[in-house]
Amino acid sequence: MTQSANFAIFPTALGDCSVAWGGQGLVGVWLPMASAAALRARILQKMPGATEAEPAGETAEAVERIQQLLATGEADLSPITLDFSRLEAFEREVYRLARQVPPGRTITYGEIARKVGQVSDSRRVGQAMGANRWPIAVSCACPAPTVCPSRNRPMPR
Image (cartoon, rainbow, N blue to C red):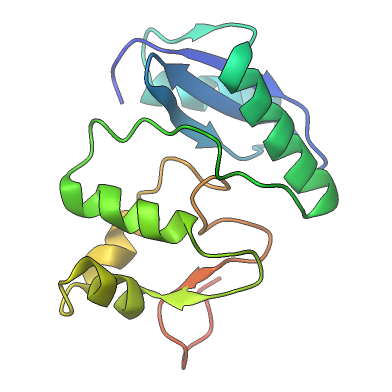
C-alpha cells in the first residue's frame, strides 16, 4: 500500500481505530494499538506519504458504521466501499465472499476455496485472510470471527 492516501484516527468502544482511503474507497482499516501515536506510526510505515485528514462523505459514513459495530455489535458494513484494485483476482473474490458471511455465521477457508472454484487452495485463502487490509470490514478480525480455518479446529489465538 504505497499509493498516496488520506487517513483518519477515530475513537471507538475498543480504542482508537483508523481508516485510510483513496479515490476508489478504503485502502486500509486498523484496529487499536497501544496509543494513537503508535497507530499513526504504523499507518505511516505501511503508507509512507499518507496524509491525516478529516473523513467526509462515504468515508465518514464508513467510520460511523465501524464505530456503531464496535459499540453495539451490530452494524451493516456491506455499503463500505473497499479499494481492491491492487489485489489479485483470487484475493478480491475471497474478500468478496468473506464480506457476504452474516454476523454470527462461520465459513471455513475450504468452503471459500470451493466457492472460488479452487478446492485445493484452502491455505491460499488463509494467507489472503491473514493479509487482510480491512479487518472489521472484511470478516476475519471481528469481535466474533466469521471465517475460520476448519470446522473441526478452534481459531488460533
